[in-house]
Amino acid sequence: MRRALLAAAAALALIAAPAARAQTGELVAADALRVCADPANLPFSNERGEGFENRVAALLGRALDRPVEYVFFPQVQGFVRNTLRAGRCDLVMGTVAGDDLMQNTNPYYHTSYVLVFRRGAAEPPPERLDDPRMRSLRLGAVARTPPVDLLVRNGLVENTRFFRLAVDTRVEAPGADLVRAVAEGELDAALVWGPIAGYQAKVKNLPIELRALPTEPGAARMDFRITMGVRGQEPEWRRRINAAIRDKQGEIDGILREYGVPLLDAQGRLREP
Picture 1 (cartoon, rainbow, N blue to C red):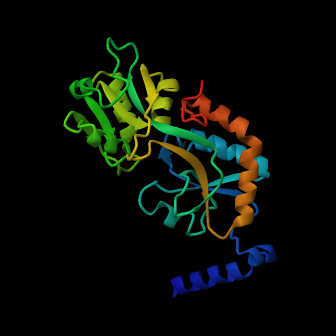
Picture 2 (picture 1 turned 135 degrees about the vertical axis):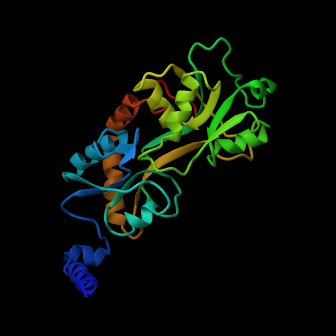
Picture 3 (picture 1 turned 30 degrees about the horizontal axis):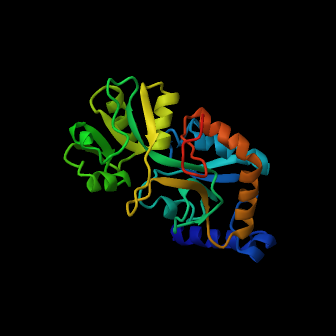
């Protein structure tokens, strides 16, 4: 009975929504910027607001003149279903352009997977993965990420240590662990998502360098344009977010640089810090 009463109350609340929302079909809250985010996933977001996506969300909140409210949920399978699609929040930060679970905004940065190696190494890794010398190196990668395709194509799987992809970010951080393994000399090089590597280099001051991994013909893509996600059928909300991104792009770039996020230019090359 209690569940039935709660369901009825929720239905009445939806019926009583403002007329403008009823006309457009948009379910966006008018009194806050409700952001869906992972509670423990630095450098992206956490409950203390220390991630760069927290900073970008705060910037957008000011641009839209709305306080930022978070709905936290671990970014695992079911994240979108339990947050954005459930109507609990209205904006997902840091999605890949073309994600079919959400409608994408315009991109707000362009980054890449990178090859990480220890700064000042006596012999840095070769520039190309198909160089035979790569097979003598102790490599690392996160399982089931795009760089694994490059490792397979270049015969480097046997000398690669794989870290798990599907983890609870509240207790494990495979990308950060991978980068630390390089910094501490356990691995000679690693293939890892650029924002994670850049954060470990700039904010955590680990002695590492990074190179953008080029996309090889016929291989998995290494560079991605990052957008924000909204529900489908909410064109006005998407338009407002796009306008805020456009107006604040310079400040967004500044935040990303503070966190060491490697940014690519139109030709796919690393931009100067």
